[in-house]
Image (cartoon, rainbow, N blue to C red; front, side, top):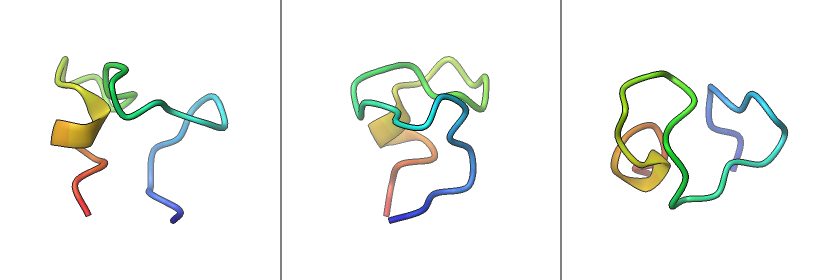
Length: 32
């Protein structure tokens, strides 16, 4: 389940994505 950009260990799927896109994680880097 390791997705590239996890800044704080665990990113909730409904939090904003740590990549800085402004999208929710599940709609951005968490889409797999």
